[in-house]
Length: 301
Image 1 (cartoon, rainbow, N blue to C red):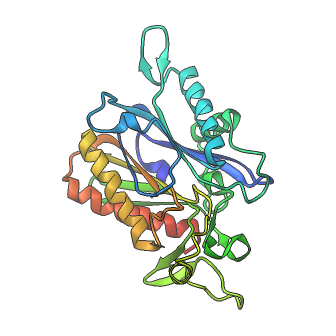
Image 2 (spheres, rainbow, N blue to C red):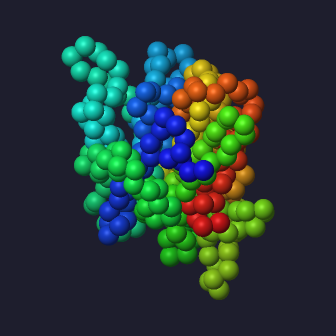
Image 3 (cartoon, helix red, strand yellow):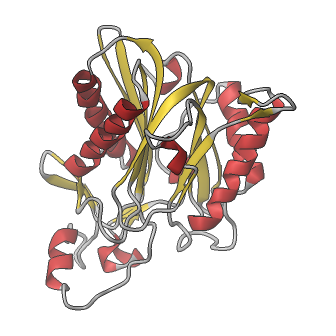
């Protein structure tokens, strides 16, 4: 099963491969209950305060994951205008107001630093979502400029990327899309599969590098980051959706070392369409699996 097979959701991407940046959008035309969890020490986000369980926001119509560091938040404007043009959003009488949340990652050191996702690219990602364009893993969408294992600098880093995964159990479906741009390494079954390289081309082990250099106070720049969006047909309220996003972070912790560092802006969203009755624990189990698998898919692991 693919992300596009989950009823009620569309996923689209747009990128500038020459400039090595792009964005990925998850759309829910009918609106979805949305939660968010931010664990990284250097996040850059849009409209996440409204997702807190005590806030009035009832439905979210899109989640945008973008490159471009803080500049990449401009792409959310294109998503908002695209949805408004199609009558998707909260009806306020004179128009509709789409609720669009976003988070960005730092990819300015790859490709062209002066080209970032903008409103035009956000619009294009939405067009691709509605046209049914296939989801491309690796250096596409928000993953276009991603790298992993930057603890020794970009010269010793490897390509990151964007990935996806879907898990089903009975009528319950949980998917995830993840853009992987972490300071640290990606591991599978305890073995590094992508990360910082040693001089001889073997894996250097980012955790050991950070421990060895603990007195140096290096700045790896903010917003390296793993961004993810969990997509599910589960019927959850906002408090439960927030918990689901928290459990999605477990997927990052299982396969990124170190996870949630000071230099990352690790952020997970959770969008719930409400079609399936489920226990919260069941959907959280699948969410952690889906995020972990999406991270591994992003790096070809």
